[in-house]
Length: 356
Ligand SMILES: C[S@@+](CC[C@H](N)C(=O)[O-])C[C@H]1O[C@@H](n2cnc3c(N)ncnc32)[C@H](O)[C@@H]1O
Image (cartoon, rainbow, N blue to C red; front, side, top):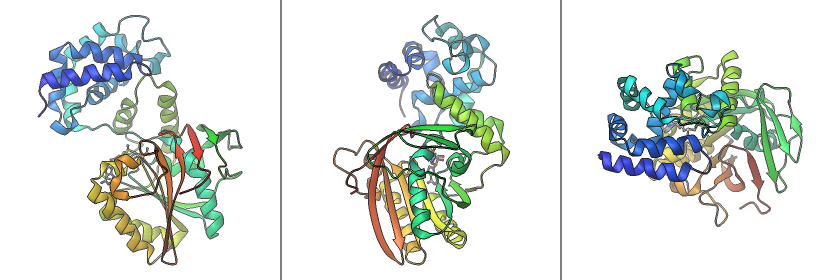
């Protein structure tokens, strides 16, 4: 169990690493680090969850719920303001005193969770190629789906640079810088079905749950925050289908069902890093078993260094990046190729000249 001294060290460390890209969280983290009473709030979380970002998500959640208007003015995602214009600490400290019990309850029961809709821009070329290859519409199974936003790739627009723009009049348009010879599609692949699987699914119609998802986005990341809000609005019009369950134990049945409807495409994006290396290997083994019976494709957007159990190929020096990998099972024969590296939130795609 980390003690308060250790948590203070964690806040100091976050203050340093966040400084270049997240001035508000950097400033708040250095002030929190010197205030043992505020740091102590984080000890209400389970030992493995006691990361400074959890406390910052809990306070952001309260800010989003409207209880701290004096603090909200300092959050760039809420007012586009400059966090350095005045000192947010007195209002932050006040929130921590006034809502200590709420903060303790949030950190005790929630864990940081995200859903990055921008990753759809990196999947799209692969979906188009798979639909062309198999002559079948995509029947999508997204594992570790969170709120299911990446299942809804056919409701968003895309602006590849350089490259085509697709459905650019959508309420959510995803820009994606491209390097290399990516097979960018000029139309969306046909999609026949989509289902998500998650241990802790988020219901897009539950405003408390989606507020937590929004609270986990750093307020300095203004574009990311607004993009999530817009994607949630799109999703609420016709919510995605999500099954609660485990990636390893429950994926096979969903893939077999999907294969009845179209070409079964499994996606995982920054999800399998939550599994132990042993469970990661079991996940691959489960898909291998299904792939002996039906044709399947699995598109992974994962970090090789965080998913050693997947044993997916990747070019040297890309361990710490998001690597887009395609594993296919066709008539029982397996093939695996690293296709590209990508920005973790899909803002760029670098297609490999020699897929490995
Ligand atoms: C970082 S989020 C990524 C969400 C989404 N794939 C995306 O790209 O935005 C990871 C998700 O994986 C889920 N997850 C973690 N372990 C899981 C497991 N064993 N089975 C199913 N889902 C799991 C978490 O609940 C969380 O929603």
